[in-house]
View (cartoon, rainbow, N blue to C red):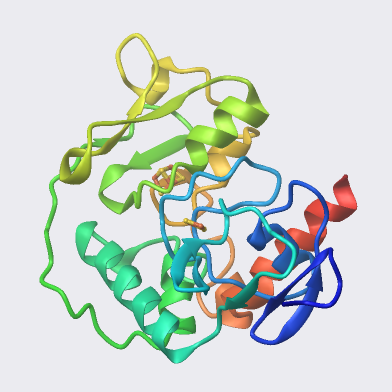
Length: 243
Ligand code: SF4
Ligand code: FES
């Protein structure tokens, strides 16, 4: 049990928290990285990628949706949990069509960066080779569902920040897919704009602004120079400074 009533411990480090903070919020605010793909500071959590799974007591919980409770003792950066996270990352790779060398998001992709961070050397699981619809109808924005990891970030960004509700996830399990809320179901007929958070938040190369892909050369991109840990902590600090 932690001595301070408003603290939790993560891997033995005492961390303060405030009312309504999740384990993820408290950890990031204290500079402790918990791997995540579907969490983004300032957006409501969805708890769907499961990368942020931590151990508390005898339970595994998703840190982004679990409230911090005084005295919680949490295990996060352990070989066992990182091995599970690596398997989840490998599953995300094989469920979609992630051909990193030919994807213009390479070097800026959080899924790829997570693979590096967790020491992923191969896909491990057989490829699904899913056939999912590409939507190139919009003049400035491309949607390639083949690379979508169904993190729900564009859905929340459009609904909660842009105030538009352009995206939704339909179906369940292997039938789950991203849909566009427009009369034709095409991006061209939606209200999305390049200035929307939903147009730029995609962690992978599923939503791309057209004609910008190679402005920064490969080798000089975000995750060519920083780990996903560094960027995850930086995004959290940037949000705190905005508030
Ligand atoms: Fe997430 Fe991108 Fe798929 Fe939207 S398009 S659900 S942001 S991976
Ligand atoms: Fe918690 Fe995705 S970051 S489930």
